[in-house]
Length: 181
Image (cartoon, rainbow, N blue to C red):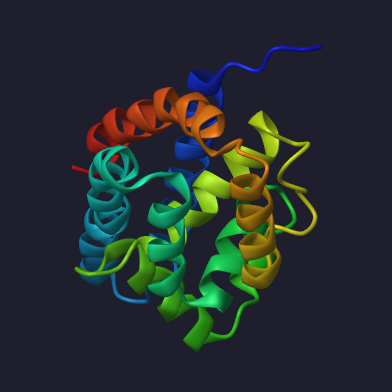
């Protein structure tokens, strides 16, 4: 069995979100606004990346993720998840409806947001680290995610998955602070 490095996965996915933030920042039509957007986009993810490790440790993996699911916009989540797994590219982003683009920018930059982006990053990581429990092709759907979380909990795998995920989340926390501060 091939061992996947959670730190490498965390670094790669955070850099992928950073790439998306730069593309979204460039979609702004005004020069001064573009610079401001590039500085702000990613702040919400940085906040969530700082919060999620302690939330998981205090409540458990499944309760933490279901809390994030409750604050997630399913369309934004799906777009970010598809970006992370390579099903969307910069051309797809450029062709998106302005409202969808605004929602993506808000998700990565506004106070009280970032839940969809962090959830997408975590689920993308789980599909790589624990592919037997999280099917990559089904995780863009919130309902399928809920079914997978229930299955993990019923099989008693939650703690094993949580312990495998925490090193990744600590790397995401450090790198998001460096990239989005």
